[in-house]
Length: 105
Image 1 (cartoon, rainbow, N blue to C red):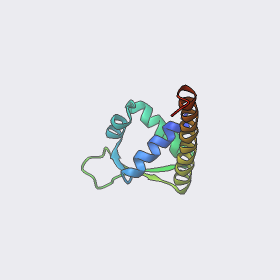
Image 2 (tube, rainbow, N blue to C red; image 1 turned 45 degrees about the vertical axis):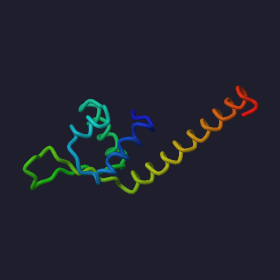
Image 3 (tube, rainbow, N blue to C red; image 1 turned 60 degrees about the horizontal axis):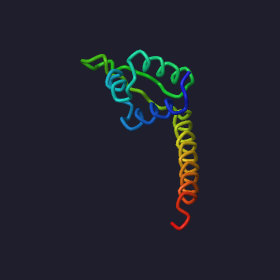
Image 4 (spheres, rainbow, N blue to C red; image 1 turned 180 degrees about the vertical axis):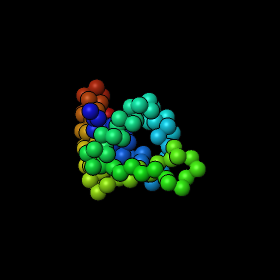
């Protein structure tokens, strides 16, 4: 089962590449094994978040088109908002902690 960070990372990479990449190159960029990436892509596809198509006319059949579906785009946006909320909360907590350590700052 994918966690939100993994989903976001994969959806973001696919969106930034306009969906065109080899799975091996994508796995390398993400720091995943090829098997883990294949599992993750299958889960995203099964949840209706991406579509996967291979290039019929490509000389290299390892190239695939990974298309974010409307549901995938919606989830990506939701994950960005959640990520930003977490980071803003962490920033506020660090700011309070810093003020406690240095009250005259």
